[in-house]
Image (cartoon, rainbow, N blue to C red; front, top):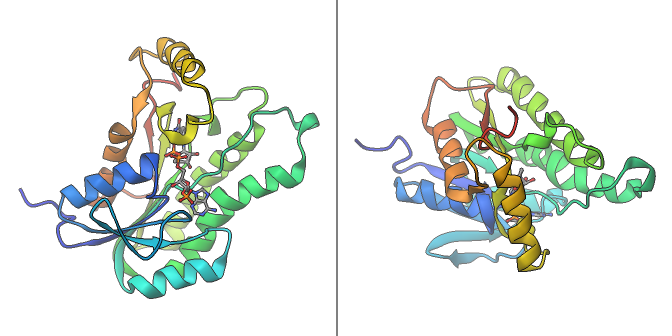
Length: 234
Ligand SMILES: NC(=O)c1ccc[n+]([C@@H]2O[C@H](COP(=O)([O-])OP(=O)(O)OC[C@H]3O[C@@H](n4cnc5c(N)ncnc54)[C@H](OP(=O)(O)O)[C@@H]3O)[C@@H](O)[C@H]2O)c1
């Protein structure tokens, strides 16, 4: 069967790493023309896919990205900051604000600037995370960003119709997001987090990418939050 992504143009903001890179590969494998975007990329190609630089904290940079690509079909947003878990009382709120600026405000900035170029039969898929609903001390930044992202996904599904808007909520996924940890520490953390899940392991970026493909391809899906977390919210 021909994929409904065949010949479609997909922009992956955050496509330079981890989950975004896996979504880009999955979409390209289904025949989409993919544009990867991230700060570390330049105009050219990366792993055989078109690449463009973008910093989501900078509206002018996002505007340049959408102007360079022109009309497109699906917007994927996976950009996220590296957040240090800390209690509210110990947190520099300017740092917290910077984190919100990348993931929450960055996605709103991207959507606003993308709309003139996004096909009205197209879709937007945002990224939250299980901490939006799984509450843990020291995680108020991720909880706030992810809960707000899920609420906005649903609200925008109504406001931006007929464009569809969905959110993918990953659990613990083995990506470069954890590259700051020493290997031994990282493997121990994955073993502990994975061991507590019904599936007995943490997830892979390719498994989460399948959720974004579903959100792009399924024309009846909008306002959904797709949990791909190995049962982490149970
Ligand atoms: N991995 C997990 O366990 C997990 C769990 C729950 C939720 N999530 C969410 O999933 C999403 C992807 O995470 P990941 O695990 O794939 O992490 P990752 O490999 O570290 O990727 C993060 C991405 O964010 C981009 N980014 C960061 N700041 C940016 C900026 N100012 N402008 C443009 N792009 C920016 C990075 O690109 P550049 O460096 O090129 O700018 C990179 O592509 C994030 O929203 C994260 O919160 C991940």
